[in-house]
Amino acid sequence: MASSLRGEIIGDILRLARDEGWPAGAAVGAKPLAERLGVSRTPVRSALLMLVESGLLAHEPDHGFSLLRPVDDVAVAAHMPASAGGGELYHRILIERARGDLPTEVTENAMLAHFGVAKGDLRKALMRLSSEGLVQRQRGHGWRFTESLDTPQAILESYAFRIAIETAALSQPGFKVDAVELGRLRTAHEGLMRRPVGEVTPQLWFEVNSTFHETLASWSRNRFFLQAVRRQNALRRMHQFADFWELEPGQILQSCRDHLAILAALDKGDRPGAVRLLVEHLSGAARDWEASPPENSGRP
View 1: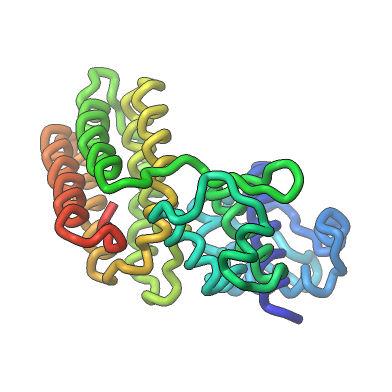
View 2: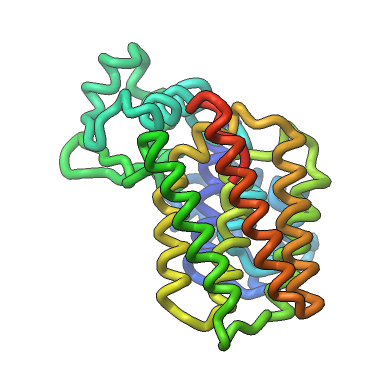
């Protein structure tokens, strides 16, 4: 069975589990999934077995497959095969859009002519971009890229805004750490640091990173801080995905260490210390970006 089909089915299963809120212990049957996805049971079963190997599902011969833990955005990214759709063309589209070489709205025919590729290859790349929230299908054969930070000045302004907003969120009188969520963030970062470099995908990297910043904002107990941070994450998604391929493994590890240090300070009740570390983290990322060419945007 083609690995691309299996990868697409894995992505469909993960998104169903996330969007429908499947609880831990939920039965995951090959037959009902095959009917929902419009494919035969054989590729679905192969996809389920891969999810068993990656630690998301359990399998008992007499009881079938079951979900070991609920699926969120980080889990979707962590268990998605790195090769699931698009390959080289996927990377080219990301980079050209991040540089402003592709317009916000574009037709498939225009992209086929621009890239000189087969229609099937383009469709795979677009479906992967769509699953990652980077493009949306328009009526007919058109696609619209999500709004992004598409100039160097916009990226630097975003860092300055994030420093102001995210540190203010930590300083709110109603700020309260959720111990369970803090534990999940720690686990996600430590798991990312243990992964071989080749298994860290742009989607996993972005989801772990963005979830960290959004969770800290949510602890402010002020919806407007959370909305602002979510908005910034949405805007920076495109250039973060495109620039991922320029990152050194050490940059990813250092960002994780920065995040873990902030969590440790908050766990001890040291909010001023956490604010200082957050300012250092985001200011350092901005300096790294400014000191590098646009295609090497560095740490988030």
